[in-house]
Length: 288
Image 1 (cartoon, helix red, strand yellow):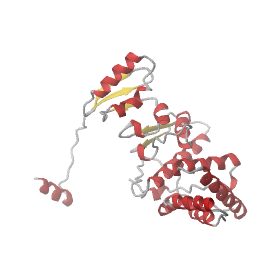
Image 2 (spheres, one colour):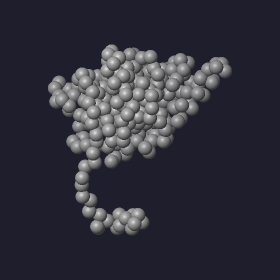
Image 3 (cartoon, helix red, strand yellow):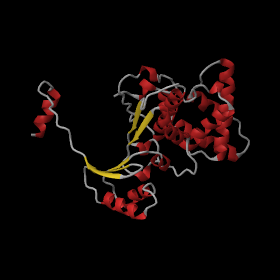
Image 4 (cartoon, one colour):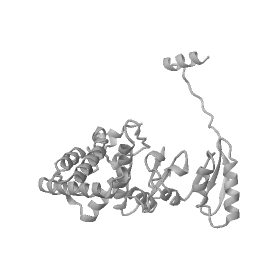
């Protein structure tokens, strides 16, 4: 289990060499995650444009702190502009406590040669977690896209508590993260998304998954998002929906592109020797 500091990301990395479309995509990422209004989006674009020019001239990699400073220096000429600036600064300030994870580039995919778990619980805000996951996926996608050949799958990414990192935001168009996940499979990357409820995660993500494994759900509000992905045969949709509604703890329905399968999970037997662990003995004694 590793902390995100071990795989920190500078979200503004490479801004000096970004083309106009890439800069717009960067603004789009912030717009979705921070729920920016059009005036806030335009002001952020202005600040990023200034940072891009400075980074190009100084051949440096700017950070979120510099972005915060750049926005604070923008001159305003009216009350609406002042309110736009203040609101944008508040949103950027919310992730300032996560700046060590989002400003210092340490991510190196080539050094990963075994399963790695990155614990995001220490990032204090959902905004920080969303931003990290968003740009982590983008980094992985960009690196694998440059490979000339790859195995299937070359890499498996598991997103736990996905409702906190790729939530259902009701967007009419796909976000950068959603587009990246949708295209990852053709570059040898498999993504496993785990969530408590399908209605709380991106519907674009659900739509682009090849296999959906559904365990016991809370009610019809959780079942309805699944129905739209069960095909056009209403009889089949109703049958599968009824089966999902009757699932008990440990049971599941696996839905593929061609059929649905029923199954039941079972714990794996194992032996755990705690004889030499003093802390474990204290816990065991307390439970007796």
